[in-house]
Image (tube, rainbow, N blue to C red; front, side, top):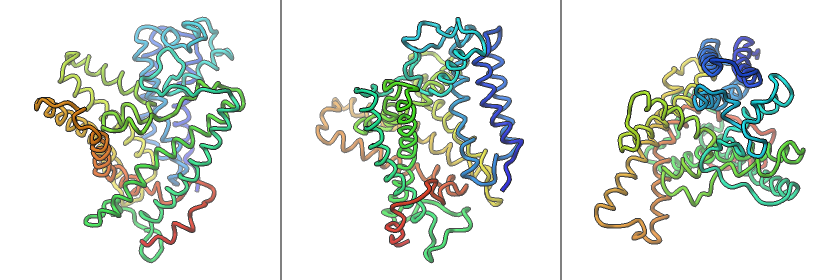
Length: 400
């Protein structure tokens, strides 16, 4: 099927415009121009249609939003100063890019590093809660990552095949032709519903982790970057004993800075007083709301079946992310009530972690269908993106 040339050009222009302005010399109102052009092009992408009528081919272009959201954050953080004045790599000299000539090779290298490093690892403005870099030499790191990639690849294959079998396969063995009524909720068959939610929930972790490890092997193996530039993408699972910690410590921190900066800027503009309970919870709901909106708009850039409406392809994503804010509010209230009873978290002893993991699991189980059903309606998960499968034959024997 043909590519939508106008949509392709618009999406690539969105990326190239950021690069062009990063490598250009600083000039007055550059940050304002940068933000204006980004927002105009983002809006344009929603009017020109998807890049391809095939979801798998169009999806890579929907993943540009963390880049442009991060660029907007950098412009806001810089304020009246230039981005070159505000962001620099540790060990490369303070304000390293200020003395670089516009469009020169050094400035290009700096711009590429800035656009590609979402967590700003090794920069003066590194995101909070990024795990510490690994110890060891270059080839020790590469060998370890190759082993990890193999394991992640096997798990990813298993999850993709399980998703196809459990969610997309009809009792007669055929693939559902109409996605409008598909859902991972199973009503009374809670065990099957839990299995579907587990497959969907684990998918993003292993998919992103595998791709990150693959990139680290190439970057460090070829000498383009160092081991310290590739700390783990995710935190330890032992941190995920609350919904707050799940998102704030365990999950990747790739969009933490944009969500934090933009949310605080909005609250400052509205005059919401800092260091107050209202401010704290307004921030949580706003940050998850912005995250939900950013994820939802990316779904709108995908082709959708003729019988799927705009709301059916976006709102579930918003509900999922807003629920995370609700869940954090609930767990905070429970913790506050526990303290009012004169108790401490340590009083739970060995049950503390067990209860925490159970709560996070139940919260995700309840909320994941909102997001997963959107993906199913858009037919994002009906085929594996891997060239082959190890587990396909085994998984095919699972009754549906």
